[in-house]
Image (cartoon, rainbow, N blue to C red; front, side):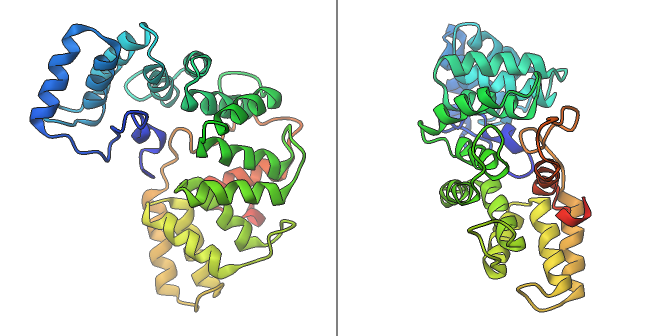
Length: 293
């Protein structure tokens, strides 16, 4: 979800995320099964504690205990969860280097989320120096497993020429594929391309941008709300309406919480990356217009 970012997607490899309902009887059985100490059962128990499902009280700290026990037995999904929570500082001290190590271990076990998270970390310099070649390797491998997160970040690399040939047409194609499969950030990045119309192969298309921003706003994405307000204020693809614009700006202020995996690292800006890439990533996540960067 927009609010929790990737944290709310932990467990999607087994179909148990924050949006999934679990009845109390099923939850009780899952907790009972975890007593055998098997990694798969520990993983399910950890998810119940993380999300407060199946009659279990939400407890990130208890979830971390189960995730760690499962990870120590080689469970790749638990490694991704530990990396995600550690990078976010959710229930545990924030530690990007430790998070990177967990992602690397999950990637070595061929876990698609571990692969793209490792690639994204290398791209942004989270817990390490920026490594475009490493990012390309792991994102490509994750994309081969139909990871739409990986397709999105490969699109970013192509759009800005980060370790890959700069090719905005290919970037758009990657965003389109990910967006057509419900990837929210790919939808948002695609919306920016259509809103500004300043990329070769992507002419300005305000109605399309408006539709994509509306989809993001429905998920409480702050940048999408901001851009809807901006377009409404200036009459871009929609009639000028200051009251509606004010509403969208208020929504943006209320929901623009930058969560893990949705925000670029500002402490390790790549020296050889263009200012445009860095600035676009800022407005990509916050909705601040590029010309104001």
